[in-house]
Image (cartoon, rainbow, N blue to C red; front, side, top):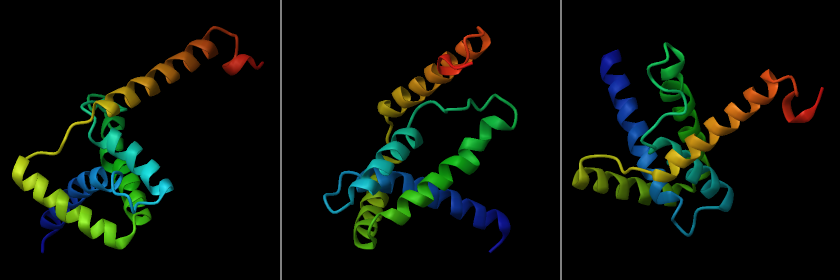
Length: 135
C-alpha cells in the first residue's frame, strides 16, 4: 500500500470515527467521562465552521490535521470495545445510506462561544485592565 493510499485510509477512518462517536455518546453503555468528551468532539467535528478558519495560512489546517484527529483518537480509546464495534457498524451503515457525515449546530455554538471568549480576553488585555482584572 502506498503512502497516499495509507493516508486516504487513515482519513476515512477518522471521518468514520467522528460519526462513530456521534452514536457512542448516545449509547447507554458509554461511561460518562467518555460521553462528555464524545459530545465535545462530535460537536466540533461535525460543526459547519472551524475553530481556526482554513483561510489562515498553516494554522487554519492545524485543527483539521492535528487537533481533531487527536481528540477523536482519545475519545475512541475511552469508549468500551463492544460499544465501539456496535457504533462503528451503525456509523458505516449511516454513511453508506446518507452519503455524508451529519451536521452539528451545537458545534457552531461551541466555536462561536470559543471565539467570543478569546475576543473578550484579548479586549481585556489590550485595554490595560489585564486579563480577569489582574495586574
